[in-house]
Length: 402
Image (cartoon, rainbow, N blue to C red):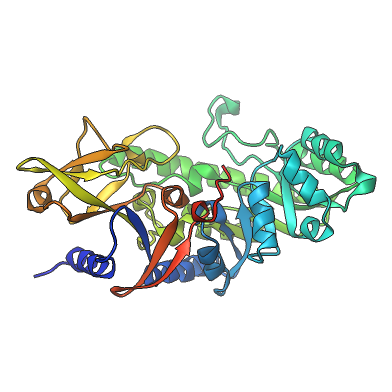
């Protein structure tokens, strides 16, 4: 009897039978279901879409048309400008500080752009750079968001849990920076963001590592309690100097928990729309995989081995096996430990390898979400066993923002 994975493979193969690998597909039924689920987890607070995790204008727009989704979090200022000018969004928060003078020149020359884009800052040097590009008296007001570092630093700061982002960690530091921004001509502080990467971006149930999983969950509970108090205090301190329009937090892995924080007014998500393999390690909510890429079998180096052309689409982050793409269809394939996933070829072992013939497709899932789109010019959108649309990725539209 055919399993669900067998049926999925048959459906994907039928839909793409006329295509030659490599290529990538998005199952719209799963994509839309994930969008609905994420909005539900946010409990009425708007979900801002992380464009870095999607990297296709059409699919960003598709999510934004759904109830509960509003605004974009871009990863560079040039991308934000492009999304506004192309009509994708009129509310774009740039997630990281920028030093792109050309993009700042464009932003500060256009009142409509300046009204639609919010820049991220965590110090006065970034304000100085903007002033050097165009002085306050010769530009529209620049909207800025304060980046509060959300890492957990127990034991008096001797332990660091999370990523190293902003130098602004305490409520006092946030209030002091807000006071400074409030006194600067040409800027308006409209938001505060605190991204809890150690909760939102770290799976709490890594496969085969029960002890590590328990340790992660203990750390996440401690971090959440600490951040709940510190973020609330920081928001209160900042509000003494600025009328905040939003307080942003979270990511796909913490939508429900972050939304429960009364200080937070909106959450960010994006990876959960595609459901990459890193989210297989989460207990609270796991998206339905919607994005896959296919490679063709081109060699049979042994009776129990099959080699596909390409496949080495490695995810960013800590160098580890968790960053490798995973062969998922047909079931029963695995990468070789000595070779992994290669740029030009990827040998596969496992029970299913003996059944593969030259020209067969092997379907992979990427470890992360939007990075998949850096390898293809278009995404084939599938409903059932048919391709219903072909949409360009950022790369397909000639853009490589970072």
